[in-house]
Image: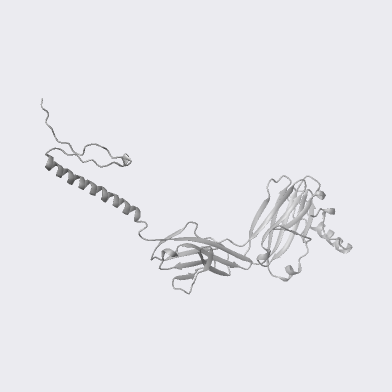
Length: 324
């Protein structure tokens, strides 16, 4: 961890370099008499050789913290191509700035000697510059200010997210379907589709007539599957390759037989047929008993509420004349 000796932490400079830095800091430090927020007190952090040699665009991001911050502050940054990056954290405190320790970390690894620390008034600034060339430089970069308690600000660098269909896509056997993946405001170098065979991702075989991969725009891809079978259902993954990393999204496909939506209807029809058959049999039985008994005959249907216990009531009764 680095404290703030003399408000500027750096290696022991030569007198000539010290004089140059003091002049530059004095030039960059604005007056705050008008009450407006001051600009960053350092604008002359030496550029690395790789930054001067490349033509990458610049990404500048800031995080503000105070001694009263109750939670770490995080900022998500999306990158799809190599860039020069300038990160700045500022920490405002009522305490002694020289007693504040400042450190930077990439993920869990501490960074050394590649950042500048300076101060204006009651605010402490730290700046870290670097270049992102590939996926190894992506990740989380955090600044830490340790006074009585530690305050943290984190910059999360990620490649663009892909967007598919949130809900399962439902289709039927014999039909065709199209799975679509999009990347908002980004242009991947390459798109690839995979299907999941158990826990293993298998590249979709475009050589088969069953699959067609295309896309109207560079930021989207479409997978068309023809002559669907029930075994075609499952998880499909679209994979995008960028210069600084990879991103993927999955879409769930459900393939149903045409009989599936008919099952509830067929079950109802079966119940109706059974009920009608029972009524007809009862009527037939009643008519037959009438002929033999010459009286009134009742037909009782077994109720579902009887829980399987047969009701011991007479099924027919002969009409008797009452003589008084």
